[in-house]
Length: 75
Image 1: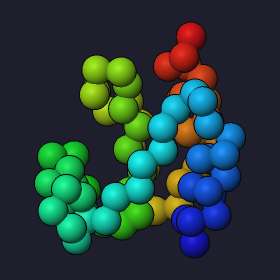
Image 2 (image 1 turned 180 degrees about the vertical axis):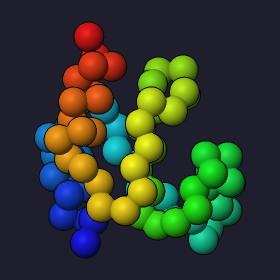
Image 3 (image 1 turned 120 degrees about the horizontal axis):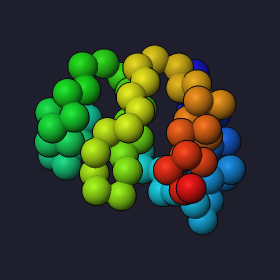
Image 4 (image 1 turned 90 degrees about the vertical axis):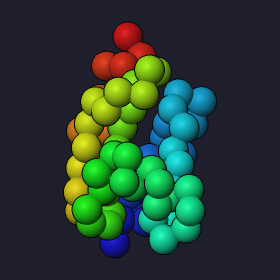
């Protein structure tokens, strides 16, 4: 399951990046799913400070790749 990985990312990235979990079945989550072309769940989307997608993963999140991408954004 993706939840333990995302929980760990949330703890590890605290103060560096915000981790948002959205329900694609509610209004806001559904709108964002359409905007970012989310076709399956789970999908992890990493945005830079201007809202540009810099990393997208579908399925089980790759924790190391996400942490590395966040580190690169913070340089």
